[in-house]
Image (cartoon, rainbow, N blue to C red; front, side, top):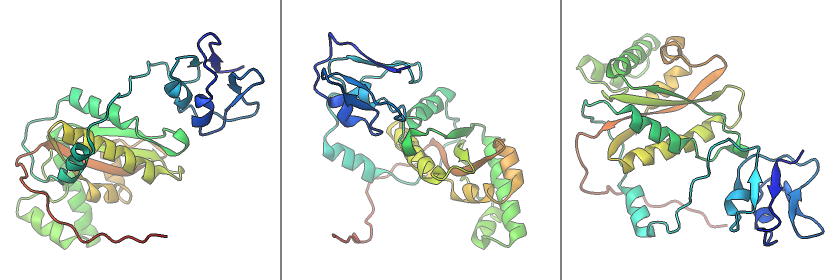
Length: 260
């Protein structure tokens, strides 16, 4: 039974829905209307409905939530470029907790990040309690001490600093099934979406590399995070109200590029 229906009274037969379909699920029939191709495999991306300017398509296979309106005008390129280049890895945070509503909004943005074949296999873990964040840092340092790893990390910890999660009031971790080949890539993209959405709200963010690594080799960290059975931690972010502002954008190494 077809999941995609077409309102013949509204359809302009322009073929846009067919052209944007990444899985070639749609084709134009003899009358010029789009219809599903027998044996095709829809990936439920929603492109066909989203691109139809006349609102002629409906897709019952998509999640039952409304489509959101797309921006009619994007910010100027100079604004976007400035925003992206102004982004900093923040490692000094205020101790105010991040509101649960804010974290939910950030996750809602991140769940719309692209995934391989629109698989959407990500699972999120949020640690919004500063004491629990500190406990994760302490267990990471304990593992590093036993593994003879990270002498600089251990020295900082002994001085009363937190080199793992930097005293952040919240941590967000992204997981996927262990056997999912595109887990790292999908999580990196989604975490970047979340990071930029957080930056736009004035939050400071830094990637949690130590925690991500240790979660892959140290069962107690996975237990503290309550990682579901069969899932792997693919990346994480520490975030909170930034303690300091940045006035300038630091330089970078010259661009290394090859045109072929």
